[in-house]
Image 1 (spheres, rainbow, N blue to C red):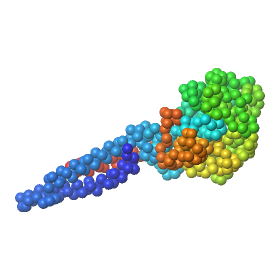
Image 2 (image 1 turned 90 degrees about the vertical axis):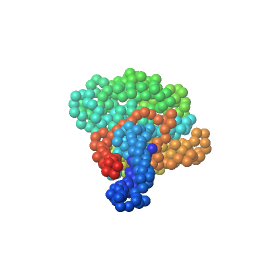
Image 3 (image 1 turned 180 degrees about the vertical axis):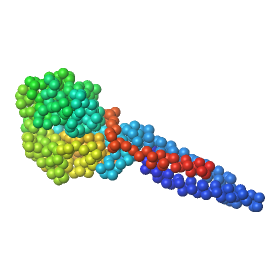
Image 4 (image 1 turned 90 degrees about the horizontal axis):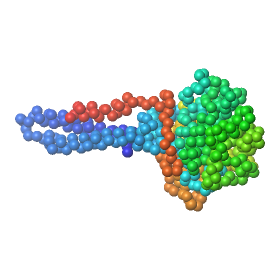
Length: 461
């Protein structure tokens, strides 16, 4: 199917022919005025004119068909689009003004779940996409009646994030209104203007996803400000998530490999939960985060080019006593419009820096804001590259071959100029369209482009 760019190329090629056709009509008119004086010249041949007209009408019909074809869920990666429905499977319609790409085009919107391509390895051999403040959604309605005054980090629901391949959620939990709420707040206290909603609502979304997708594993990382006795235990049980709980007693404590993902799925240990409160491991059986993973500095300190310092609560990134690695990749103040730029070349460079800082160990979790925004492949391409290198020594995970030797790769380009690979195990139906001005499109320019040939035909036919 033709893209917007192919469409304009076809039009540029057709216009000279249309102009010649117009000139031919003028000559034909002149010839008719001289019928009484002389016979038709070769330029006045009716057969020649009809043949030329048929050719041009066929060309124009083909052009109209091609231009229409990319507006029916067939547009490919980087093709221009007008809505999310225009883009094919695994893609959505966005733009990137920060890189001077103002007209919307199809970008990747879903991850390739690595276990659907290479299975049978320990959990810590894979890299998973994580959303920072997963609950902090732009335009989320206030449930307290107060005007919310806080930062936002994502643009779609947790359910949609999971459908699009996100497998890690960062949730800030607080005591609020005699319950446990998700808040994006400060000083360890939730206010009515920083509150998003009861935590159980989001946890039920996770439960529904795990129930509907029995081979998927989800990780929840809690920034924990809950002081109610056994508060977290109760809310997870109320959401029905206790049946998926990976026991803290089975987590490796000395840097060993984690269980094989197939075994975790078989035993239904498909939910990993970590807390920032060290006391909860003894009191509630919830793993203290930095006992099991290292983490780089969050916020602006973690996105300095060429640098990857560890978070102060974390052990050094090259520590051999833990076997999970969380890479934070988001600025202190989230910016929707800049996220697409952040998720291009700078992201790949920082992944490389953190890989080296960790002693040539690939991060297991990559946490980002506005995960859907990019200039083409974005965080999804980054995750593919990370898994490709770790799992099979290939440029991208889609080049891995199940059962093949390490380094044996299919001929698949690791580039955001190719569409996301879809497969039964790793593609989901979620989609999201950019909010606000970022999703605007210059319809007049496209309408002029499409209607201009009509005006020519009306003139010459």
